[in-house]
Image 1 (cartoon, rainbow over the protein chains, first blue to last red):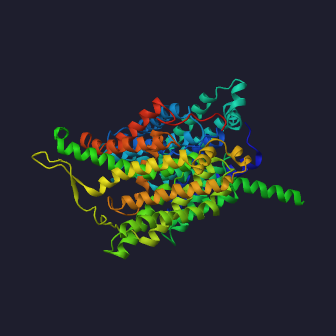
Image 2 (image 1 turned 30 degrees about the vertical axis):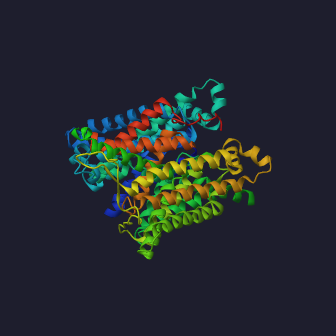
Image 3 (image 1 turned 135 degrees about the horizontal axis):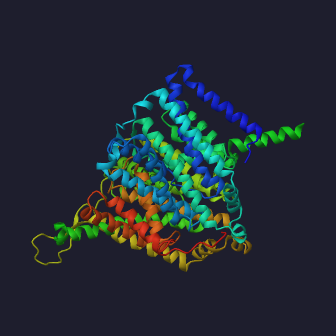
Amino acid sequence: MVMPRGTAIVVVLVLAGLLLVPVLGSNYLVDLSTEILIYMLFALSLNVLIGYSGNVSFGHAAYFAIGGYTCAILLTTYEWPLLLAFPAAVLLSGLAAAFVGYFCVKLTDIYFAMLTLAFAMFVWAVAFKWRDMTGGDDGFVGVTVPALIDGRVPYFYFTLVVVSISIALLWVICHSAFGRTLVAVRENRTRAGFVGVNTRAMRHVAFVVAGTFAGIAGALLAMYNHGMYVESAFWTESAQVLIMTLLGGMYSFFGPAMGAALLYLLNVFTIQYTEYWPTVQGVILLIILLFVPEGVVGLGQKIRQQLAKAD
Amino acid sequence: MSMLTNPTIVFLQFMNSISLGMNLFIIAAGLTLIFGVLRVINFAHGVFFMFGAYVCYSVVSRMAETAGAFWLGVLAAGAALAVIAFIIERGLLHYLYDKEHLMQLLFTFAIVLIMGDLAKMIWGTDQYSVPKPEGLKGAVDFSFGADLAMPLLYPAYPLMLCVLGPVVAIGMWLVLSKTRWGRVIRAATQDREMLAALGMNVPLVYTAVFVAGSALAGIGGALAAPRVAVSPGMDVTIIVECFIIVIIGGLGSLWGSFLGALILGFVNSFGIMIFPNWELVLSYVLMLLVLLWRPWGLFGQPEADGH
C-alpha cells in the first residue's frame, strides 16, 4: 500500500506545480490544465478495467456521458444544488455500469469488447434522439454552474480537488487486496478461479468502479464546458480514451494519466498546423502498436534498465 | 398507425426492408467472414465501404453516360478495396496476429482515422449522388393485372438488391461448403495450428480472406451509392449497423449475418412508421434483447474458454 518514494516525490511535485498554474496568469494554461485533469481521471478510470482486470472496454464513453448529461440536466433543468446533482450523476453512472457490467462480464475478450461497445452506442442513440431531455445533436447547452465555482480559476481548483481525491481513491482501490486479486484474475482467470476467487464478481466490481469514476470525469466536463454534447458518448470518444491509456502504458497506475496529458497536448499542438488530427492520432497509434506496445512508461523502464546494464 | 393499414405503404415498406437488409448483408458478410478466420473485428470495414462508394462515384462521373458505367464502378470499387486491403494486411496487420486482440482492434481503428482523412483529401467534404444504372431507373409493377385503386409499383434498383443479396449469400455458401478453398477457410476458423501442420499456407489464407471480405465492403459501398448521399461520415453509420447485424446474427456466421441484416432492415423501415424518430434506439433494444437470450447471437458459437 505504500507508494514508492520516487513516485511519491513526482506526485507531490506535479500537485504543487498544478496548484501554482493560475499564478502564472495565463488563462489559456488554466483552461488547458483543467481539461487535461478531466481526461486524466477518465483514462485512469478505464485502466481499472484494462490494466488491472484485463477487460478491454470499447464503450467507456457511455459512463462519461451519463455522468455529464445527468449532472447537466439535474443542475439546469431541475435546478438541483451541486451538492445533490454531482453525487446523483456519479451514482447514476455507477448504477448504469452495474447494470451493463452484469451482462458484459458473462463474456470475455472480443465478445466483451463488442458488448460494451453496443451498450455505449445505445447510450449515444438515446442522447441523440431524446431531444426534449438532452438537446439531441445540438447538445445540451447553458449548464447552470453554481456561482462559487463558476469562473476559470475557481473551477480549475474545484477540478483539481475532485480529480486529486478521485485519483487517490483509485490508487487505494488498485493497491488494495481487491486490486491485487484483479491482477491475478487478469493474469490467469482459470487459476484465480481455482484458488477460490469469484472471477466474474471481481470483474463486475471493477466494471462498476471504472464506470463510476468515468462519471465523475464526465460531470466535471459538463460543468467546465457549460454544456454536454453527443460526441462525448460516441465510440470515437471511447477509442480516444483507450489510445490515451495505451500511449501512457496500461500496466502502470499513473501511465494512463501521462498518456492523457500527452495525447491532449499533441492534439492542441497539432490542430494549430493541420486539420488532419485524426491522421496524426492514427499514426501515433500505429507506432505504439507496432513498436512500443508497453507505452511511454514501459519504454522509460526499458531505457532505464538498459542504462543500468551499461553501467 | 393508420399507415400500417394501408396495404400499398405496407408493401413498399416490406420491399424497402428487404432491399436495405440485402445491401447491409453484402457489407456485413465481409465483416463476419474476416472475423471468422482472422478473429479480428475490423473497425475499418465502414471506411472500406465509404471508399467503395467514392470509387464508384469517381468512375461513374468520369464515364458519364457510357452504358455499364455503374457496373464498372462496382467492379472498380471491389478491386480498389482488394488492393488496399492487401497492402494493409501484408504491410502491417500480419505483424500483429500473435499480439493481444486489443492491439488488432486498435490497429483497425488507426486505419479508420487515417483513411477517413484520406477520403477527405481525395474527395473533399461535398455530398455526391450516383445515378441509378441504365435499365434500373424505372419501376416494376406488382399488381399482376389485378384491378387496384393504386398500382403496386416498386423501383427497379432496390428490387435488384433484393435479388442480389440472396445470390451473394448462396454463392458464398457454395464456395465455403463445396470447394477446396472453402474447406481450407472453414478449417482455418477451427484450428489454425493444425492447418499449418498439415502443410497449408495459413498466412496466405488470412490474406485471401481479408482481401475478399474487404472487397465485399467496397462492392457493398458501390451498390449503396445510388441509394444514399455519398459523403464523409457515411462510414460511421454503416459500421455501427454492421456491428448490430453481426452481434444479432452471431460473429462469424454467414447465415447469422443474413438474418441479422434482414431483421435490421425491417426494424429500420417499420420502426420509422411505428416509433418515428426512435428507430435507431429500437435496433439497439432489439440487439440487447437477443444478447440477453443468446449472448453469442442467434447463430453464434459460445467462445471456448481460454481461447
